[in-house]
Structure formats: structure tokens, C-alpha cells
Amino acid sequence: MEIPVLDLGPLRAGEPGALERLGTELREAFTEVGFYFVRNHGISQALLDATFAEAERFHARALDEKLALKINEHNIGYMPMRGATTRVNAVGAVALPNANEAVFFKRDLPADHPDVLAGKRFRGVNQWPELPGFRDAILRAMAGFEGLGLSLLPIYARALDRPAEFFAPFFREPMFTLRMSHYPPCEPTAPENEFGIAPHMDTSFMTILAQNRIPGLSLMLPDGRWIDAPAPEGALLINGGMLLRRWTGHRWLATPHRVINRSGRERYAIPFFMDASYGAVMAPLAGDEEPITYPDFMTGYQRANFHHAAEKPVQLQGA
Image (cartoon, rainbow, N blue to C red; front, side, top):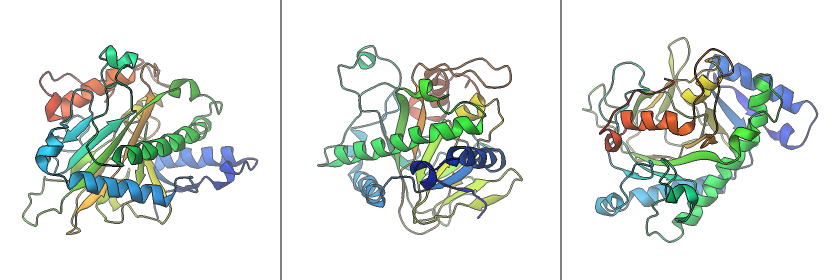
């Protein structure tokens, strides 16, 4: 296996030296591959299975019911099939619109939250379908992923030779997005430049991906080789995106990846994208790029890649 595996068991058990060992392993993972697996992460398989089931249940709804929750300026809601084209973070030539549909949820803010009332971008109210039990299941999933992400921050800090608590002030209320995607089988006659998701780099500080029993995900190693992502039992796959790369002064990789569903079956995915708090100012740890915030970065990315937000394209900062 070319993707490193980090065992969180010793750290969670409080074993001496575990944090330093994991920091070294993470540094190697992000300078050599850009992806890594975690074992003994604390998220139950039952929770993951339930979340996949909810993704399937949502996407089985009639199209008009899904379109009633159509994605908005906060990047919350339903994006129909081929509703996005990977442009700014594309790897290689821009492909056809992505052959997937997805629904997006963020932190579940109440309607009277100050950020909601102020109309702050990406701080809107979630659009929930009328499906009994769906909201509670998704909130449990997002809480589990967020907890894991926060528990990994000391490892990231030590991997960068910073104190274990270095990232804590930046993640007091992290931004996050759960994307629940549906990839129909790829048609045998599909053109070569059509993908479930075209080759791209994530935007996030951290992406946590529950492994899929139906294959389709592959990633590009630094030497240019594409490899299929394996699915080891009980492991979660994690990678960093353009924000992490920028924050580390481009010392760490944001590794290109893609999805092509040639399984002949319906494929679902539930990636969880986690970033710093909304107003946290991320000054690169090396180099001379300007500090940036989450809304600065994501406004440009969204307008460049998502069709619903493309009325006023702007240059993406930090790409």
C-alpha cells in the first residue's frame, strides 16, 4: 500500500511518545503522498453505514423534491447532476461538468444566529429534506467527523514543529461541510473528459473520507502515477487541500484525485471538509503570501467552480 496508515490507538490511550511518532508519520505522508489512512479513529462503522444509507435515501427522492432545496450562495443545499465544472482547482484541461449530484450541509446554525441575521456568506441555515430521522442522523455524523478532525490538530502541529496546541485558536468553531454525493455508473460511451469528479485538488484544510465499498476514487502521486485508493477495513482516508498547502507555505501536498464510477452500480460518497473558524486569519508558515480567511478563499472558489454561483466570476486567491 502506497498510502501511509496512522494508528491513533496509542495516542488515544495516552501512550508516551505517541504524539511525536504520529507527527513524524504525518509529515512524511504530506510531503510524499498527500493522503493518509487513520485506524482506531473512534468513529463507529455503524455511524458510517447509517450516513451512507441516508445519502442513498436522499438521492432516491424525486428530482423536484430535491430541487426544492437547491444550492444557494452559502453552498448549502442540493446541486443537480452536472451542476459543477472543475475549473480553478483542476488538474490538466478543464473537463465536462461533473457527472454527480450532491447535497451539502454545514454547521446547523439557528435562524436567529447573529451570522445568519447578518447574511454572512457560508453561514446560512441548513436546508433539510422532509425525511424522518434524516437531520438527526446527519448531525450525529457531522459531530463525529468534527470531533475526529479536532483530535488530529495536535498531530498536524507537531508535524510542523509547532507546539501541540498551535492550531487550537484557529479552530474554536471550525467551518465544515458534509457533501453527500451520488455517482451513477459511467456510461460505456461517455467521452474521455467526463468524470464523476474531474481531477482536482480539494480546497480544505482537512478532508475526511469514509471509505467506499464501491471503487472509483484514484489519486495522483507526485511522480505522476494514478493509483486506485484501497479501502482497508476500519480505516478512514484523509487528505489536505489548497488551504492547508497555502498555510504550510506550500511545503505540504494538496494531491490531485478524481472519481470515475465504472462499477456498474450506484456509488455514494460522504466526504467531510473541515477548515479553520470563519474569521481566523491564516498567515502562511513560510513564504511571503498574504494572510487569508475562509470566506476570502471560498468565495472565489465557489464562483469559479459551481454553476449557481458563476454570475460574477472572481480570481481565486491562493490557488
